[in-house]
Length: 441
Image (tube, rainbow, N blue to C red; front, side):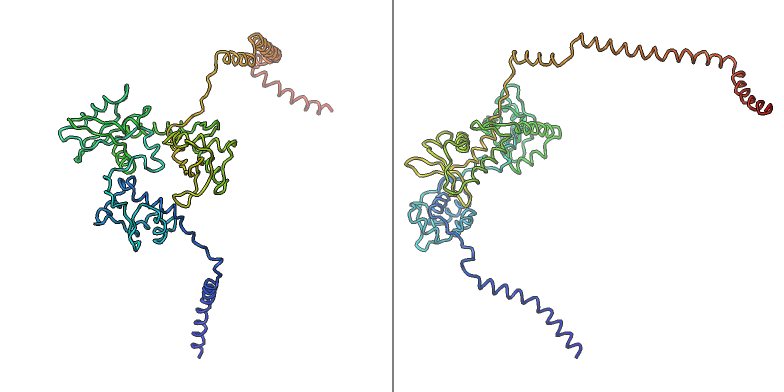
């Protein structure tokens, strides 16, 4: 009976924690619909723009996956499920019905059941091309600060690294010569490391060499390829390149000026742009007479498209981006729809060629003034000589004070040296005198 009672109590103890969980489930099911978060539906215009981009020539000439999927289908269709699997579509929480509704006003063709989409009139696909090198990670902008590393492919079998180096040296400016040229590997590829010079990346990326009758293009290395090349470099070349990179990094921390506004460095400029955006609500315009408006307008001049990008602009505002849930700046044009603009591209351009604060050199007159100030601060020769004379007199007086004492001490010391026995006897005599005086008493 005792064992049964113990087992019952154990059972009840184990069941007790389940009660709160059951209550929590009931609360969750009984929670009013008003408190549940509602998923915002995707904007039809944004969805249409994104799907049209996926099937455009600009994307498909670089998008190998979508190109192969379209080419493998007899009718040139691309499944809607594949479009929905893209990160930007997921970010907008787009559904199949959203795509069907958004493409009603589009030139793209949609199957009756909405299962697939294709280009207008099943247009032929563009030829696949490699993506431009500027679509890299954030740190790629400074990957070649210490010296550009380029890759030269399809080197003829009978040609070696010496021929490549000779042809490259002919194209380089002035006294610039390559730091290192690797052996041509089995794939006919050779890697070259050059010292940094003005406009090095732009020149080497567009360079074409004629080696053994073949025209070879130079390609700047990035990512894993760059890291592999750097690991195989001789130690002294790698250290030299790292030293140059640190030097460039130190130079980048100099103050810059954009739109008459001064910033400690490019990072401070980037932080200011974020602050301007975060301090405004969606649809809020920037005041044309304000410093924020002037700064953003000045930044637009650094956009890759230059002044053409901001042509006809009459205002700036902040709003939700058409490319997802993030926010961005919009250019307001008279009689034309607002256009979003990427200030990241503008800041990246500033970082590549920073508008550093120019330090004005001092003229001759300023140097003379500074010289006079320094002369006034320093003591004159006469004052210096007077102070030296007074110091010497004081030291002489101190010496004369010590001389009498020395003079008195010298005879005593001399006598002590001559008659040491007498000197020792005198204290003994002095000691015996008190004893004689006591006896007389």
